Length: 101
Image 1 (cartoon, rainbow, N blue to C red):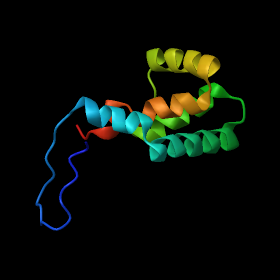
Image 2: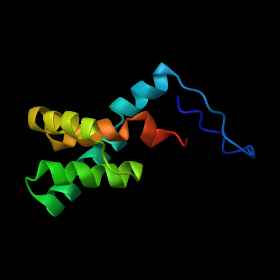
Image 3: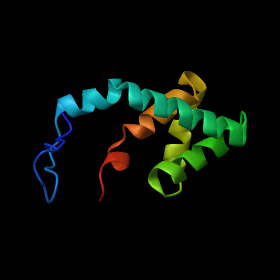
Image 4: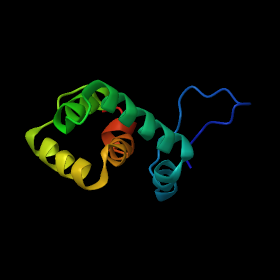
């Protein structure tokens, strides 16, 4: 689903395709879910209940850039409605996190 190369064959570069199966695999993958939980624990340990500071750090850690005003507003709403772990899961499934531009 994620275009993993055959380990028995030397491959100079990995094929790049985007498929619904890859997206579903990442969304439901136990590794991604565990990493979302660990990231949310890290943010909670650093910032307690300060959602804004946690969101700001999450964008720096995941995307290596500051959060925009619009992203901050939407992320704050998501954290309040669904929790920090769900927000972290969204970031780890974001196109910006998975692809190099």
